[in-house]
Figure 1 (cartoon, rainbow, N blue to C red):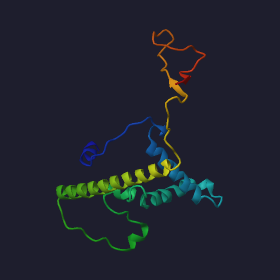
Figure 2 (figure 1 turned 180 degrees about the vertical axis):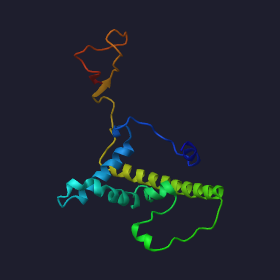
Figure 3 (figure 1 turned 30 degrees about the vertical axis):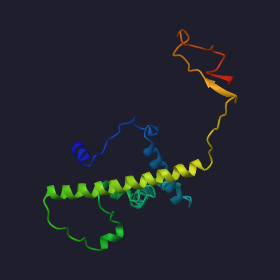
Figure 4 (figure 1 turned 90 degrees about the vertical axis):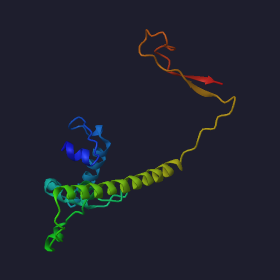
Length: 176
């Protein structure tokens, strides 16, 4: 697996097991899958979520994400997802290749997909920033305005740089 990750420029991230808060992408994916499960179990079939889970995963992996422009399956495998309906139609037989040329072509396909997804993610990020910034305004301070002044807290109470007591906060006001 290490060689595959190196070949595809994948950086593995290790987090604490059963602690999705350590990895925001996993937390967001879990929330999306949970929402899909809730949508499928609206009819009162909440007891069979384990039967519905493969269908949720198929829907998630086969749906184009607006932030990347690709399906998760395509970004991971470099080819489109074969749906159950595709089993009725024969596969186009690829040209016979050696494992090395197949790996090289797969690497090129996945790299180009990742680069395109990276560009799409940057555009989505800029769009989200513009959407967020519509409701914010920069603070314009003038000379003579009253402001809060920050005094950092020292590591412990005996530190010589400690500037306040336990009853005061690290912010002091007003200062000119």
